[in-house]
Amino acid sequence: MGAANATTSEGTPIMLSFQGFGKTLQQQARVVQFSIENPDERLAVGQPVTVRAFVGKPVSGFILPRSAVVRGGNGETIVWLHAHPERFAPKPVHMEAFDAERVVIRAGLSEGERVVVQGSELINQIR
Image (tube, rainbow, N blue to C red; front, top):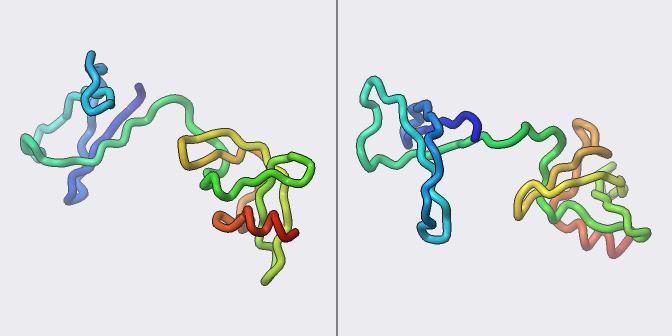
């Protein structure tokens, strides 16, 4: 596990240090334990925070919803670009899963290209 930080509902940042994983499941999830650096006592017991833990290697590429990626006529993985008003162009891409709802486009896209993220299947059917 890499670095981690937390933010209170007021936006106050708090640094965390990873301590370990719990040995049991709670509500079908594994508990991750951190110690907090709280020198100014900015955090009270029971106060909710949003935790961001950084794990693994940094991801390079474009993160898109899975709905943006479709299979072309020849089976290749494509996204649809919004080229001009009412004109869309297919673009072959290389992707990997990012999480349950998103993918990482590793190759095939450039900065500034406008990708269709909703309705790609419909465009794919009428091409």
